[in-house]
Length: 140
Image (cartoon, rainbow, N blue to C red; front, side, top):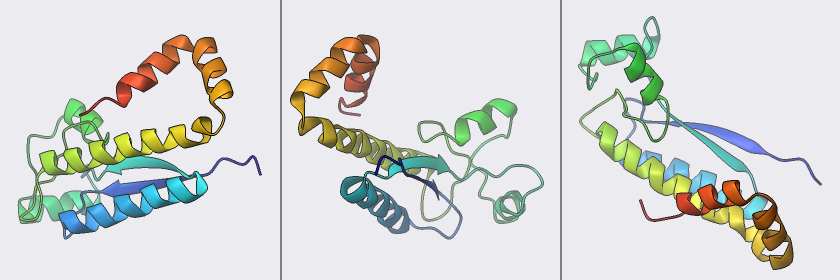
């Protein structure tokens, strides 16, 4: 007891379909709900010199020009992905990821709901962080 768990997920790989991504995210959210396992989510990024880059180049899956900024944005769930296939667009991957992150944030509140006094104490102690967290729960 007391050990915090986390799991990492990558979505948006070639040959992956939107339904596959949804299943992955549902699995991650189920782990969060049942066991409190934090979800760390990234979007597949075709870095130069990797097999993923070669595949994307060969099949025409690169959605836009590759630049240092594009790479920095692409990995983040809120960023603009670099892979576009017959099965998904970067925007679709971003929307799926955003919904999953929002659900995960809501699930993070469950332990605090069991102890409202503790939740209020933490909210007053960490006002700025609490405000930022509450804003993150607003509709996408």
